[in-house]
Image (tube, rainbow, N blue to C red; front, side, top):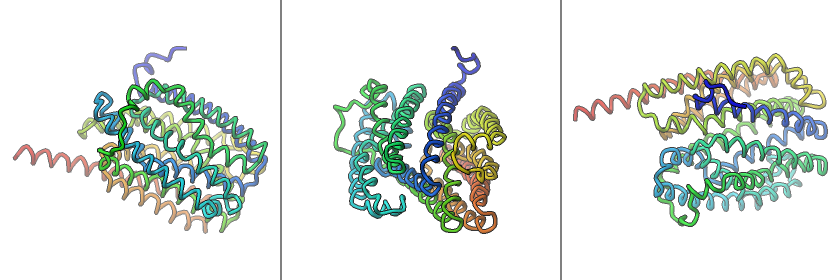
Length: 435
């Protein structure tokens, strides 16, 4: 079936419509998977599964030393410059090998510590060691994803995401029925292996064309350029996941394991549709902003993105809000009805987050390291601080209220910093003309 003409002629709408279809399929499958998981594990164990997912997300950054956004940026800018691409991929090889080795040793030999921290029981150390074995695949998957996103291969990206998700879901169900809680953890750890296999099967010709593996060298000529992205990734990924774990543990300590499980379920739901934002960010927004160097062009593109995405996103969120009781009933087994009051604050926060993160992409596109770190740390500090305060007054709902408030502040601060950047750039250009 052909897409309508107005969609075919708008690249962002084409990406949005295709990703929306993939996300819809993912959501339907996720509902079934989550329902099966929550029917077998306790709310407390479900919270531990959330902690483990946080660990996996941290590993996606650590194993590649956080260069994903750097790969996206430089592939987008130098896709026709063969020599520059080989410098990029040689540097990426050095970074990922170092990151993978360090991550493997830390995880394997610190298995007892990580098992207690993320799974609540040092006896689960064998699950952490299984995860350590999968580390090379986590790093490879991250780098290859950066190449796909930098080339804006949105159709291939959607195909890889969907097929890998289908296989991973089947694996999750098989391990869940076989080993219950432990099985879910094993399936999450093995998911990157499936993703790499699917990615190579679908994209091997593209990788050979751009990466040219036979020309890779053990050199890092772009190390200095990529290190900026390493720092930004560690802040945005490691700290974000750690704060989420701290908040989940705070909920469990102050309110109980059931409330921690309720919040984990809400976060899982939110992350399912926020995958849509992540895909659009790396496939379209970051490569687009990387090629824009003037305020007028930036504001024009920002307006186009907002006019395209915000109404669609807003309509989808309204639908989710009005169907929240139905969605909770079909996604979760057991009593998760306490999640319903949390939706309004979570959805409002996610809507503002969409606008904020798109705007803040300029920090990544232009390597505005200090601005990026400042705003990320501010956002996380606000989230954790407000969560601790609001939990005392409103219980678990206070965490979602904190989520909403912190993104209002974050958006305002990012907007001011972006305006300051363009004002400073204009002054520099005027001074250069005078000279």
